[in-house]
Image 1 (cartoon, rainbow, N blue to C red):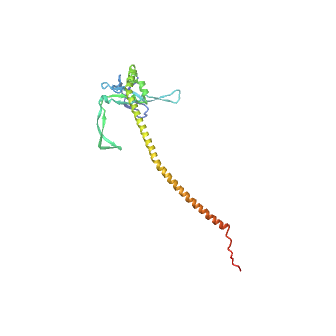
Image 2: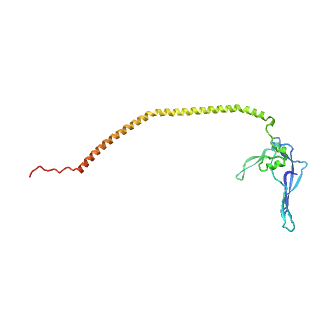
Image 3: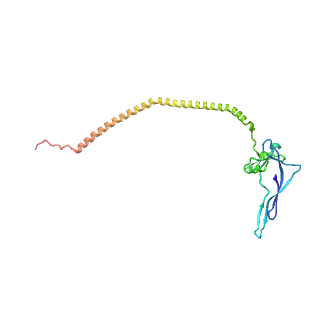
Length: 256
């Protein structure tokens, strides 16, 4: 027998601490799902509350034929799970006021609102949890945890056709807008390229004039360098001739 409930009290031995029990405040699982969240929920009978005592940890000593005693651990609690207060049913609201905590210090000047839960014992089982979802599906009734399709399987194809027909005009509009954007971008790129070509054509005569000026300057420099080279060669020849073939000494025509 599986009992779902809230731990009301924990009791253990004072000396050894080896024996412990838990007092469980039993809740009942509702036969239907939550009308808004679609998940199973728990209800508590205020008129006839029931409590169940279970073992939390029992150490049993066994001795067989003078062999060392064996220690067994028995635990009746299978697992814990998460539940949330059914605030939509209880109509809980942000009616509470408390000081705002900043850097672990309560600020007396600044306050904030918080949800005050009404004392209505109705709790929603969080079946969306991942760490123990398989355990919940194993313990809860199958009709409360089986996936519920949004669309009736008998009308699924018809509903899909309606959804596709509703989205098809939107898709056509998006494609047309995308084509217009591509055309505008292509036109802009062509205009930029045309401006670049025109700019190059306008700048071409200036480039030719600059090239002519450079050519004239280079030709002038070349002619000047040629003259200097010729002059230098003539002088070097004269200097070489004077060094290699010196003029003969002058002789006097006076007769003694």
